[in-house]
Image (cartoon, rainbow, N blue to C red):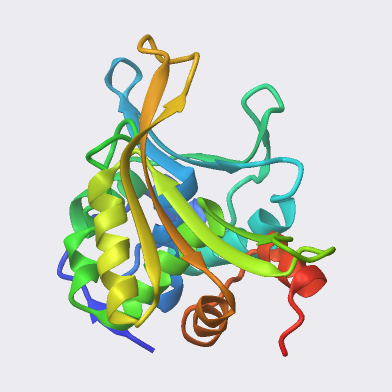
Length: 245
């Protein structure tokens, strides 16, 4: 297991200590995975007018409750000493947690280098992970467990059988970083950059998206052996559809 020491010191308040908050002195695989989750499903931002520092992570309430309770909650506790209040968010349209903590905000943005603010072209994997293959793998695993998708196509057969693993982002930089890792891991990938997706919420009527696809059984075999999924949703879909010959 990779473990990278950090030279970063934040003095915790009495309120933080009572709450059970801790800040990791080193980065391990579980924390790298959590950072991937935050890149995929999360947002980190501050409201200066209210002196409020927010770490929010939410997914689909229909099929990601297990992911948050069984996987993300315990990994957050492993990193920061407590399990956040995981519940319905955003008028019951999303599911996850919102944590208000200046110290966690500072740790994630200053010590680790996660982006704060809107998830746009600036989104990327922090430099601290890029030179450690094992940690980087766990970051990417977290991204695929949240923003990624595993599907099975029928093609020319009666049942879905042909696996396709994909991930998309507004950030070309993020997709390029993931692509570089996957190529080094001998995946056969398809890269699609700067394509327009209809988006009525955008004043232009579309959003620019970047995408990676990994098609076929060899890619899925390689993924399951080298990276893997922890998302119950993804694992269930594989169990229902993947019949390895």
